[in-house]
Amino acid sequence: MILKFIFFILKLLRVQSFIIVSIMNLYLVKPKYFFVRNEFINKENYALNSYGKKNVITREKKVAKNNDYVEIFVGRLTSYSPKCKGCSSSGNVACKTKNGKSFSLIKDGQYYNDKEYGKIRIVAAATTKFKCGTVMEIKKKGKTPVLAVVLDTGGSMRNAWKKKKVWIDLAYTDSKTAKTENLTGRKIEFKVLRYGW
Image 1 (tube, rainbow, N blue to C red):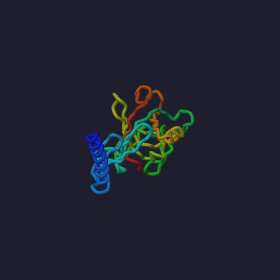
Image 2 (image 1 turned 120 degrees about the vertical axis):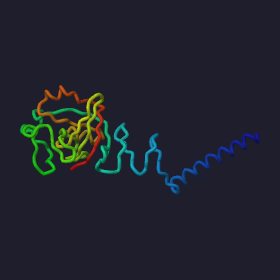
Image 3 (image 1 turned 60 degrees about the horizontal axis):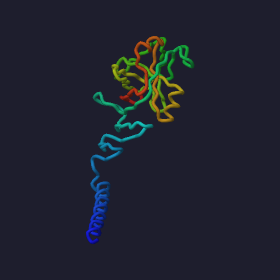
Image 4 (image 1 turned 120 degrees about the horizontal axis):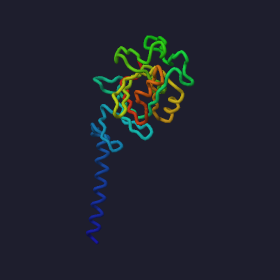
């Protein structure tokens, strides 16, 4: 009976010491790393956000440096051309270029010459999250990554983002090319390299 009582007291002391050490760590020591959702995250460089079922590690900066990324998302990639339903027959995209000029998929093509990233593809995205001029790397398993800039948007993409789901639409001058490239699908990785212009 006495032994049981002693073990009970020792357990209480162990729990109390754990609580005291935890409080000291939070308020006095201020550790460099903190524990969130089974992952140690470096306080100086990372913040952990949650979008749907996917955990997204957000670096606290707006422009990536040294081939780094600002933010990573996993979502859906589809394709469209100027002839799609609800699209502009002139091929004009919703966003203006950095110089404030209009851009047409028919006249100017499916590539954009970015001063920082060179010749890259054009995508439509939820501009409520991915502002015009946002540059991202699109990666499908087994395919070469594609760099693209957000120059267009769509209601479906904006509605998806309201539910914290990422839906990106890759622009083509014609729908035949989209089928041959086979870049679309679900569980596509999107690395944001730059937000906006």
